Image (cartoon, rainbow, N blue to C red; front, side, top):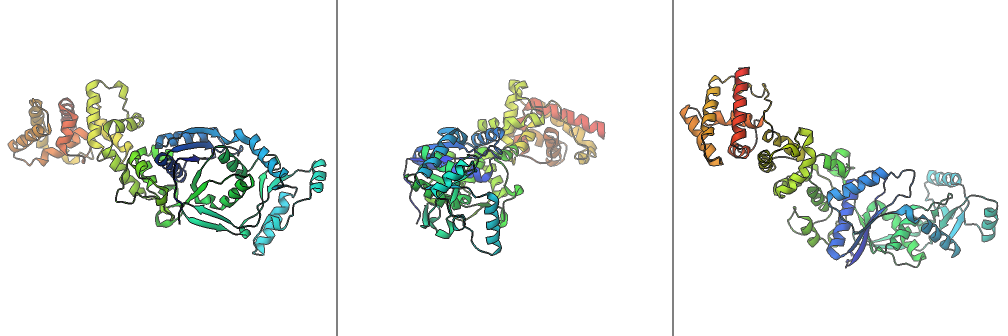
Length: 485
C-alpha cells in the first residue's frame, strides 16, 4: 500500500551539470514542485557538481534556464554540492571512528579481476565476501607506509525495506547489499555519501526521483541509520518510454527541454504534458493550468507503470495552449522567433503593430507551433510580398481575373466600415457583377494577402489585415499577374 504524504514537505531537485535537462529530469522537477506547492514547504535546487571532470558551468546555466522556461520554481538554491566536500569528508571520518566504515587498501584492479571471475562463473559478486576489512593495527601500519586507501561503509546483512510512495514496499535482501566506497583514495566523496549528507543538511523530508535510483535507496537508508538520522520518504518514478514501449529515442522525446523550446513549443504545454506523463487528476481533464495542477496534485496518483512519450499528443496539447492562452502570453513567447522571419517588433509603428497582433491572434488557432506562427505573421508587417509563380500558375492563366481583382480593389477601397461582413458583401457583389462564383475571387485574394492557398476564413483574414494593407497587397498581386501572364 502506498504511503500517504502530508505537508508541509521539503523536497529537492538535484540535477548533475554533465548534460542537458532532458524530459525525465524535467518531469521529476515538475512532480517535486507540484508536491511542494500542493502541500506547502520548500523545494531545494541543488547542483550535484562533485564530478569535477564532467561538470560544466555552461550546463548548469542551461539547466537553470530550462527550468525557468518550463515554469518550475524553487524556494532555496541553487546550491553547489561541491561546496560541502569538507563536510562530506568529516562524515566519512566520523563513520570510520565509530567502526561503521573501514580502510580499503585493495587495488581496484584486484576488485575488477574478482568481479570478472565471479561473473564468468555466473555467481553474484559482493566485495565483502572476498576482501575482509583490515584490523586496526594493519590499517595503521599500512597508512604509516603511505599506502593509498579508500573508505568503505559497512552495509550489514539485514534486509532493507523501502516504503515507496509509488511502488509500495520494496525489499532488498542481503545478497543485494554490499559494502560501498564512500571516500575515494584521492579523498573525494562518492555520490552515495554526498547525497545523504546534503539531504540531511537540507532537512529533506521526501525524495521523488527516477527508478534508476531505486537500487541506491537501500544504501542511502543504511547511511541514514548509521548517522542516527531518519530517512526521508522515497518515491521512484518509472521510466519514460518511446512509442511501442521501446527505449526513448531523440526523435520521440529524448531531447533536452531547450530543444522543445527551439521547436516552438509553449512551456505551459510541455509542463502540462509532462505532468500527465505518469500522473492523472482522476477525471477526464487533460488540459490543466499550473494552478489547477497544483490544486489537484497528490503523490498517491503517481503511476508505477512506464509512461509512453507521444509526440503527437504533445503537439495536440501545444495546440490547445496556442488557442487558449491570452494573446499577450503568446506574443511574449513568440518574440524570440520573429527575427528569423525578418520581423523587428521595435521597428513597427503603432498601426502595423496592431495589424501584426491581429494576425497572430487569427492564426494561432491554426499554427502547430511558434515557428509556424511567426511565418504566418509575415504578410501583416511587410509592404510587399513575394509571390511564387508555380503556386500562382492557375491564376496567371485566368486573363479576366486581373480586371476582376481591380474591380474588387475599387469596391474594397470605397468601404467606410472594414469588417468581416462588409468585405464579404463587397466581394460577392463583384463576383455577381462579373457573373462568376465567389470562389473565383476568394482563392486569388487569399494568395494575394498571405502567399498561401490555405488558411483561416478569407474574410477573417481580410479583416485582420486591415483595409490599407489589403488594398496594397491586392494591388501588388495584380501587378504580379500582369507582369507574369
